[in-house]
Amino acid sequence: MPQRPTLAEVLDRHDQIAARVGDTIVSIPDAAWRQPIAEDAWSPETIVDHLISTYEVVIRELHGGEGMRPVFPWWKRRLLRLMFLPQLLRGGGFPRRGVRAPTETRPAERSFAPSEGRRQFLDAADATSEAARLAGPEQRLAHAYFGSGSLRDGVMLLTRHLEHHEAQLQAVVERSGSETVSGGNGAAG
Image (cartoon, rainbow, N blue to C red; front, side, top):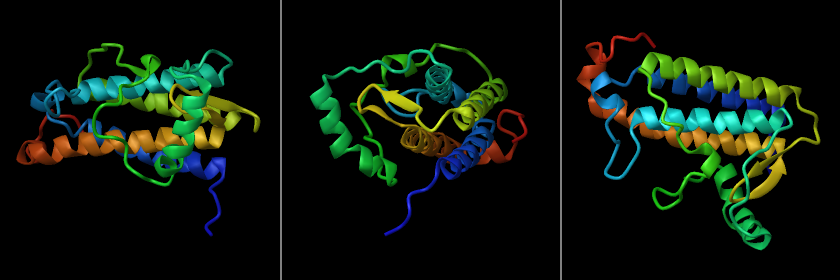
């Protein structure tokens, strides 16, 4: 049976994924930046906004403020935690549709070019990692659907969430194909 990763290992993985996402953000052509990735879906700009909002709520909680508020009664959070969280933490996919982002993580309607989105995203990712590395071992993170869990599991879920959106952003880059190769938005990765 494989050993569970330590918090330091989970944070290192998070930082690697965040760096990749930052590179992907500036690879998105301007023409695709504000276009929904699918019908009734967010645009790349809105996805980045959502990721920044997610980091902001985690940072706030790690600094002693309020985290995500639960949206379900305790028994339903416990059931969701038992049924879905282990699969997500092991690398299972997020649902494709029908699960609304928790209120605190919904996009703040920021408007920025890919290069500025990348900067704000990486600043938030770095601040989250730093705060998590400084947190005590008893630190817990709240999740609107799963309830409170260990910091390690919270960072693992945050990383899985990041990978979920990385795949969406990467698909935009791949669909854009030659536009990205020929300069896309003019930003360097």
